[in-house]
Length: 547
Image (tube, rainbow, N blue to C red):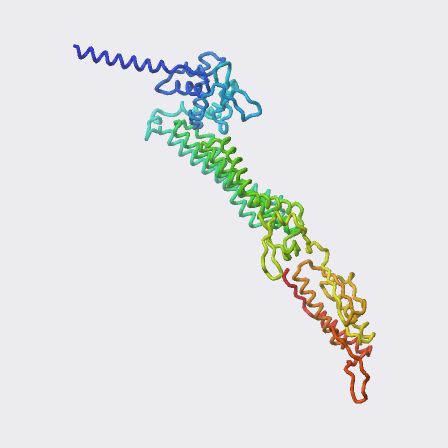
């Protein structure tokens, strides 16, 4: 009998201790953390006291407050929003400083469910009036009308469980996967058709490269719609919070990855269209801007996408942005030269002091511009050596851009011997003029070939011409052809070019012959020589050199 008494006493003591422990957990609305804990704790199956949970709702009757509190929890569970109490502030005077106004407010899930938040009234924290007002609409969005209808038509056998999941949930899940696949196929075709129409409206022609990118773009767009469909319908299957949390995390990660892919492909499409536009412009610097802009926008998309993924994994956005700002400032201070070069690059593309393939003189560097990068510009000299000039320096020094000339001017003096007869001087000048007019790379309306003076050792014939091409290589080929024609003309006319010399004049002896050349000034022969040289010159095939 004594043993029975002690057993009864021990059982009574355990019951009293448990009751005392439950009573020790009271309704606490002193801070955001306390209010949310009170709400969720008293709606758990092992501590279900809805009247206490309803205390977190202000201004309603007890019955309506309980209904609102239950629906708030159901919405959070249905969307898989797991509450981490370690992140909810315990400060009774917590202020939301993210918005335009600073007041006592705390949003549980700013990214995914900003409509549900708490606010301080007096000395206590409650779910906000806006949350209480909108909870009915939120509940209908998460659990549409057909959910309740579905529960009434499911037979008893459908509620049998297999591996902790009811049979009707298995069937509904398979049906949802099937509908998602059908939706994906249909939307993919529609998306590609619409994108093709947009592409034709923009470019007015068919571009195979753009078509390939558009096909790849239609794929993730259709997947995004499928993710949105699953996000909308999956709560209707009424899985538990643990399952919903993982499912919606996977859906959000997939959505972010698909959006990153979409924006990367959009960058490719825009860059393809911009590249076609730059090909039709005169400026060759725009062509170099295409890969730079492509790299920049690609980097922006990837960085923003990574930020979004980190937020999904629970990283605080404010802390992350603050860290990125401080780190960026430290990086900028540690790499001032790189920042200066980047600013120099921007100034080069804004001012456009030169174009790709322009022949420039920048300080001691003379050569052709090959590439403008983020940090430096590559210039290839005439001896094929390469100079890498920092853009910060290039944006400050004086640049002589010979590539911006309307024409390439070429000026030289031809020296004839002093004993050349006037008739041959006139014939030589006339022949050079005809050669310049016949040259396909010279301006026939603007040139000068004149007998301009007397040099120390020669009669000076000035040749001033303008070449049409701005490319350095073509200019050299044009000079070559002009020089060869002039040399042939001189040979046909019998005219000699002078070179620095000193002539000593002495009395000619009868038995000695002078060293002076004999010139043939026959007019018919002269005209024939000029015509022959011009005919050969016009018949030659002109080959342009590389710029």
